Image 1 (cartoon, rainbow, N blue to C red):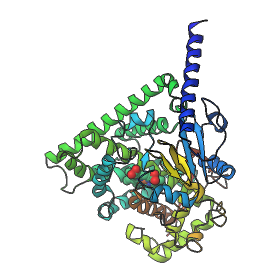
Image 2 (cartoon, protein in one colour; image 1 turned 180 degrees about the vertical axis):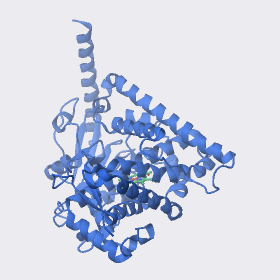
Image 3 (cartoon, rainbow, N blue to C red; image 1 turned 90 degrees about the horizontal axis):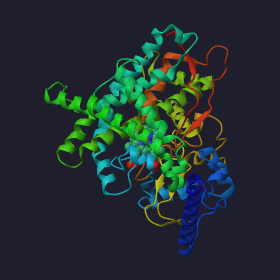
Image 4 (cartoon, protein in one colour; image 1 turned 60 degrees about the vertical axis):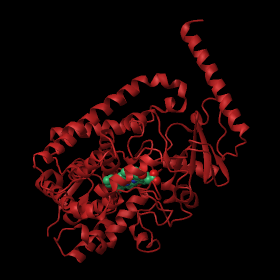
Length: 503
Ligand code: HEM
């Protein structure tokens, strides 16, 4: 028997024994587990259900197995909850029990084993980080201090499009310019800094490293090592890539942004107004957090804030291009309320109910994080009368909650009017457990306070200044979805024609 074969046999034996021990442990405890497909040894349900557990596949499974079901992905338990009642139970009533996050080898690398806030377990560290991040990022004062910056960034997008004759004729990939805008929106809050153009070398470097981080973390490529721990040695190359990206990225945050800001403060070069990182550095000075925590806060904002909001803007524009009558109705609302040519600003939002409805409808049909960020129970728990073994990954299929025909009228239609008619009381802040684009409860998205006005300003300004159309020869743009471990964005960053309006 050659060595490779022997290694494989031993490996197989080891797996079989491990599985037998785990199964007997579960049986020994007489767990009443949620329903689900019958698992096979070693692989569980993995080979049956595959890697891509996106919101649509999980919706099909919920129709088959019910509002709670269990998948065994190798050694990992994955529980999927698909009703508003269960969402309330997980996120709110039992918010402490289910308030942790799953981690895996890849996320452990990118978060320094949970030294961040978004992916850390529920407990003292998370509470402290969330408290420290609130004043610099998530208050109305932050909105008021930064909204002029967001309005300025949106105005620059409009000006750049108007200055580019191609935009009005053959069209441009609008996302590219909007990506620069979103980086500027967030880097102005964090560091009081902006990038001048899409070609800015530092912006390009940052964008590339953030892109690599997202690709590596959201890929299904590492599932086998996550699901079947003894296969982890085969992930060595992948994990090395993750470590390399992580180190270069954290170093970039440190050298080019945090240290630069410190220098500016020391030399009296800043304008005296505190930006977010100044507050965070104060917490470090007081000894509440360490230097790594500071850098992981920057990392968290880069992943949680920029692409999520950008995807939502991109989805909103795609739906408006494909529904010209809705686009026109929105334009008429803005003209009627503000007067032709008066540019949308943050304080105008309450006066523009149709704009708000368009945003909610985008977040409902095209949810950027359709399964929320996975939750986890640290200890054995109970849900809907079933036993949930400790450290299960809990997915709330928020997309299905918001697109279930039993709860919504013709959910497959993009119809903002629903939020002015039969769903007029439903807000995006989790006041209704059928609609949770930002989650709810303890681990909800604190960034909603920034995301909604940024969406409103950006979409409002584009629609009031341009007629947004598909490129010549096309009557619709492609809205195929692309999912990751828990993200959903548009597959093709479409070319869009932005024809300036004659005002
Ligand atoms: C349209 C844009 C956005 C969407 C759709 C979105 C959605 C979400 C969702 C679904 C969660 C997980 C909730 C849960 O697990 O129960 C989350 C968490 C989070 N989001 Fe957002 N988000 C957006 C923008 C932002 C922005 C702009 C920021 C920051 C400036 C931000 C910061 C965070 C943070 C820090 C968490 C983790 C909270 C925790 O674990 O305690 N998000 N977001």
